Length: 261
Image: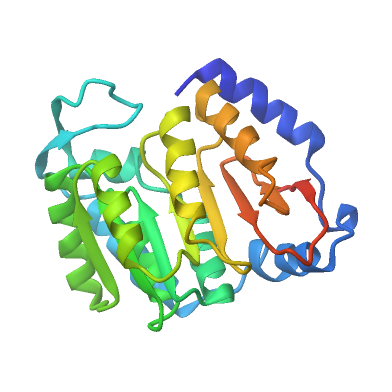
């Protein structure tokens, strides 16, 4: 992470972000009030919080292969499961938002690029048993722990794939009928992010939702986000600072929202 880039853009976000009073789109107004800012305690939260608490106490050492921008080398580094859970896993706030988005839109096909320990995957999968979640992880050792977590939660609608995203994603997209929801959470490089976006765009429909993690993680990620949100096929984009959300709804006027969260 580029610390100064992150801080500068956070201050900028705080100065530009607005709440519901600044939203003139009925679709975004409803989404912001009933999904993004929903404080309801859903049934799944306790299950996943228990899973998160266990991972934060897991002292097992994994030989982690990092193929993303956090490493740049692809070399193995020994890391505790607890440290991965504390640093790499999405925060409870944003993980729960993933659940609410999946619960709201009930996508048939969900694709997650970057499984890590599987906490985000569980949030997406538990929201609807009718959804099929395909999650891709580059590190075999991390994926093993994720598979344990999927088994523990009893979820049957998750398909886990392992390998380099560049090699696995094209094959996956050729087999799924659509990309109704995609969570981009791996390889925080501009070129890679844009490449994955363009590939998934081929399977996107009018109701598809694409979610981008860590859009201010680095200058590259911010540049990627800015390129994506102005894409001709994108109609609505929402900046929540740590996440960016885009929609392709042709009935919506093209608008960009920076919303407090």
